[in-house]
Length: 425
Ligand code: AMP
Ligand code: MG
Image (cartoon, rainbow, N blue to C red; front, side, top):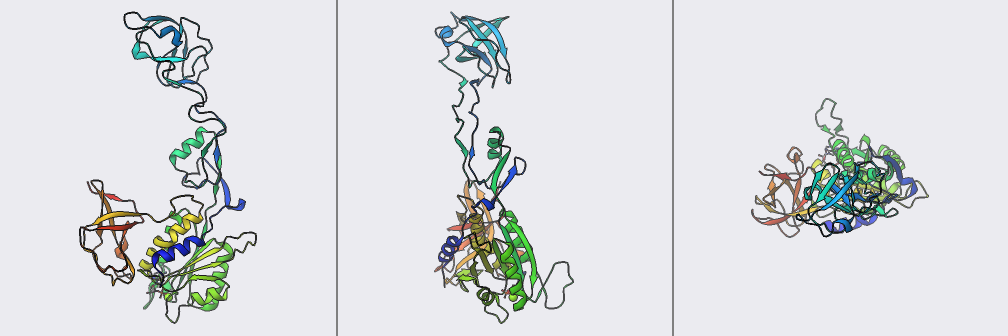
């Protein structure tokens, strides 16, 4: 049986991120949020664009004011008022100053700004009451970034600060990776859609919707392929179709050892290479199949990834969080931080429910309390059939292999999933 970390290594190594010319698209400032930048953004402008004042005050020549003080102020003639957004019209000569405001362009001849608190004004004259340092409060052209430098590298998520950078750089259209397409199939003769009346023995397909939501949350495009009966020809047909239309396929159900669990056979008959089959030492989520198909676009070496997830809704979600989500993030072109995120937290409950043979994930809530993380186990059954209990989960406490229980108060590792970390006020 593979360990979780062995399975993770195999999976992450299979992922070839988007990266060809066909894998990008253009978006605008209004549609770029949360997308992944696919090409560096170069600056065509200097930042700041010109020497400008960092404060409201007076633009002066340092030589005129360098020895002044309150007893012997420098007295300068105000020849111009420069508001932000205006180009100064005058050159500051010895004995002259310009009234200037924050962000306004420095007039030629002036090299220093004296803040207005250090001055006294009398009509068109200003008294400088304290000697500034040379170049005080001047933001020099290109002192932050020069034209031609890289402002944003590829592989980063575009969030609000990046949108501001792009707008400031007059980059109104940018290249991002297209959203990976993820086909989702639910397999099982017992499954019905949520809008159908429930007949004896049937089960409502919740995985289709939960997985689609998780895929969309990860920035990818879910392609919902519905329910497929446990019927070889139909399964083969749908999986073959999914390979043609997607970068990744998620099926749930049919990967266990039951008589109707056909997925592995079908993958083999469709020519997939199976990398993980059957058992990963994880609870919930033990039956897991990972396979690759060669890309139907023969010019691409990137395989289509196939995850055969367990049918059990809790197992399907936990497997997604632990293995699929990081793989999908890596596939999306994210250069950093696509891996799962773990925090160290103090458990506020005893954690059991493990035979010590499999890495066990127990769901609950992760809180930040006075700067430290706390894990609160969801009460009730942690059976992988108990889907309802998973609501509001934002953390999965991990019991490593070899450990059957952990006492309340112990520091544990928690996989951060779903909702943001909560706060106890
Ligand atoms: P399987 O892996 O196909 O043996 O399914 C394991 C359990 O999960 C069975 O109780 C199934 O009825 C249930 N199950 C399978 N697929 C789904 C689904 N898409 N939504 C909800 N439950 C499912
Ligand atoms: Mg089944």
